[in-house]
Image (cartoon, rainbow over all chains, first blue to last red; front, side, top):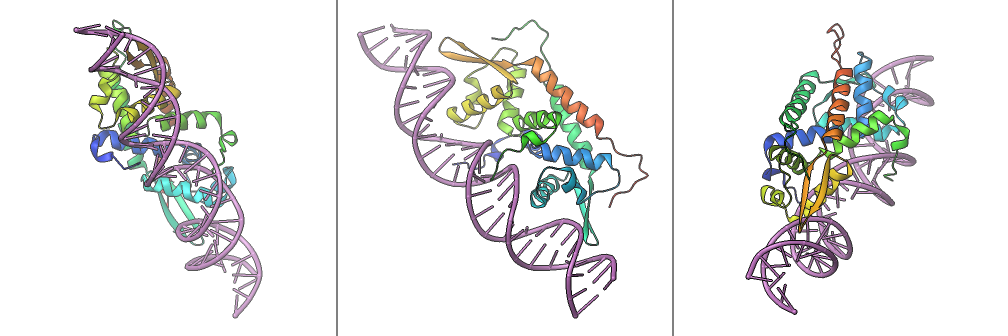
Length: 112
Length: 112
DNA sequence: ACAATTAATCGTATATTTGCGATGATATGT
DNA sequence: ACATATCATCGCAAATATACGATTAATTGT
């Protein structure tokens, strides 16, 4: 059974894994890139940019929203999205912290 | 259908998404941490450290190997794993490149 | 030779992810 | 009021991911 064993892990590890999961699809990476590029918030333009159907793009946006990496607001008939820079910075911090912690040892120890 | 649409995206985005997917589970983050910590390569000790069954740990190791983030060698009856620092550095570079590209705009543009 | 240890793999169950068409709800333009 | 545009959500299908017990294969210790 794929019972969720998240409780059994460190909070830091779960947090990082969740952020990583948000980035674990090229469409979502592309969405973030596009949102950052056009400082003006885009909505259905994303559908034009991506090789995916509107429903699918909507779903990826939902994922990014769930991870709190983007904010969305209804602007008339359209939906306006933008990067949540606060959380985004937090994510970068988490990744950097992990990478800093995982340092190559002083070459004395050769592995297998 | 969950037909793979990877071909339709930029190589850079696919590469990064693949690395992100490798980190998208707390167990795999924990494995990398443990491998880095004990410069000496561990094998079944990981099973003791993790709250998962041996078969499950083996599967996560397989995932990390698929992403080329770790190397594994059979050492007698045991299996010895270690971080593939070359690829690991490459991954860090990819993430840093992404994060550098996604810069918060000069505050002029307020989003939604 | 034989029991015990180690770890990969198989089979299975369940959950999640990915993708899309269709539908519905809201807003806009005429 | 009515046709159109925009987008979230639903329902469905297929693929992946997660987890584990059981089995297998190889190694080690006695």
